[in-house]
Length: 428
Image (cartoon, rainbow, N blue to C red; front, side):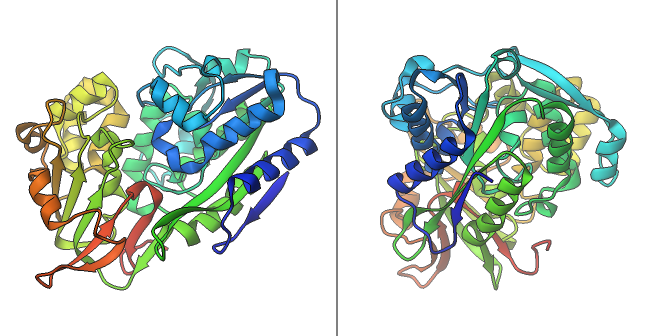
């Protein structure tokens, strides 16, 4: 470990983050060509934008490239780049193309994948990364991001930032499907999962020669004042940096509930959530908390598409969120879905499996998804303006709220910041 600080009581400022990063970079010694891999705009609260800017301030023109870990997400806009990375020159930004920009550095054996997944799947997994990592002749690669509960891998970041964030079609597709087949609810909130073991195998065997150092934050919502606060910063080059961050994230980001929730209202910030590919975090992160026959209402003012990738968007529209049996049947019968297993996994993740209802409330603009589009993929639809009259994000506080008519709801202002579960449903 080059640097570590954090607890549930810490509140790290920008100066604290800068001081910690600079201390760690000093310990690493002289570097002449540096690549930074932060998340994209969908991870804005991670503080990774500031940390990337601080790395540029430290290294100057020795920081030659910044490769946002887009995965399957849309490239960042000029506005997003300026907002997230501050004074960092936009000329340093490189776009990751998950279909064309990757090289395969090794293959995790099918027998290993079968073993760690408990027999859920049996196929080899290709470790794919953006070719810039391999061919760029860097003597330091800074992988920057937030450790937080995650639906595909259990806890986000660490080598997921490399193998998914800069990964390729087959690697992303298969890693998502491993998690879906094994069971999302068996993994969320856990650092040790089948998908993580596959990534760790790849790190140990295929990318150890790359000079990757991980800069990991832990960020959570303080329910006392409703503000997002940074609770930890961990910098290192091996599993320990992730393990320590994950243990803190479980304390900061995980809400264990004494009773299941009857009605949950989630708000999707329009600057971050424009697709169900991202917005379905409202489902992923709450499904272990919602009671049978319960209700999830998603206030989504900027919702304009299902998938950020055009082909994935098409597949979501065609097959919809109709649960695991329907999705697996569709995979068996349709080669196009078998060839896009991340889409199939997303369809499984985005269903309540018939346990509770999901109502999406997109804005009423010309770009927004329509009632017909919402209902065609298996969700219910409600008018956003009418729902906000009932459940106003400006009035509601995170957690339990008692409405004027006596109804109790549970409100979540940003589903990306946490994981919620009823204690009897969480897999310890």
